[in-house]
Length: 164
Image 1 (cartoon, helix red, strand yellow):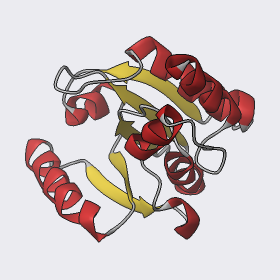
Image 2: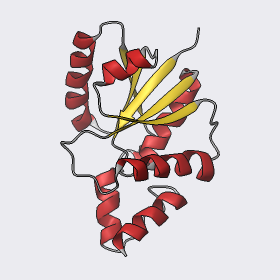
Image 3: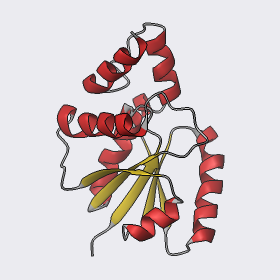
């Protein structure tokens, strides 16, 4: 049986923390759909098309991950509706620290109430990547700091273009 998971997020921008979750997810699932959110309640640095392109370059150009096992798509619906549309039975979520858990626990519970046939699986990134957040990466770049330990080369180029 094919196990498809949806990994939703804003990915503004993608970081090594996100990438850790994707790599670990590839060991568990046949396919991961990286779903780039475009809901209106966020203030994004990159628009949806830029974020999708950045994610694709990071995963397929910089890291050479398997395009047959990963699909990158935009979405602006409920994650449970996206799962149903893509025949995915699992929502993949990353945890960095205990502070993430309460929000993620509530979100998983709400998703379960919306569709009880969908499970949420939490994966932690490696210890060295647990402190990374897209927010901090953007702030460091804005202040001309070095972010090569936090994200891929193509993502760094995209960030630097925004702040030049």
